Length: 93
Image 1 (cartoon, rainbow, N blue to C red):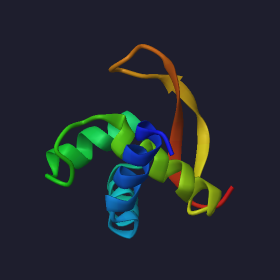
Image 2 (image 1 turned 30 degrees about the vertical axis):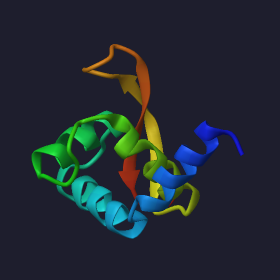
Image 3 (image 1 turned 135 degrees about the horizontal axis):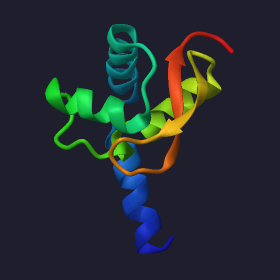
Image 4 (image 1 turned 180 degrees about the vertical axis):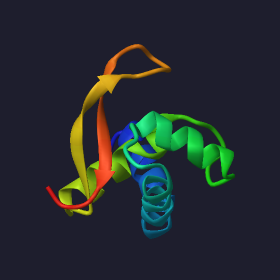
């Protein structure tokens, strides 16, 4: 295994996914539709994550969408990056 694959696997194993899922669901419950970045900003403000980097939330949002606990309801221009991004909400598709 290459070093990057090892470090990626190590980082993946450290994440408490159930805790992160709960935090994301809490943010979506309180705030409604959010992008991954917006969710990360809220989670940082709550002290759940150390920075507002979207990579704390995006992989978990994808997993929650796959499990149909959240759904992608559209897209919008991100306030932070200026790029078109997905918007997530609670619920089934």
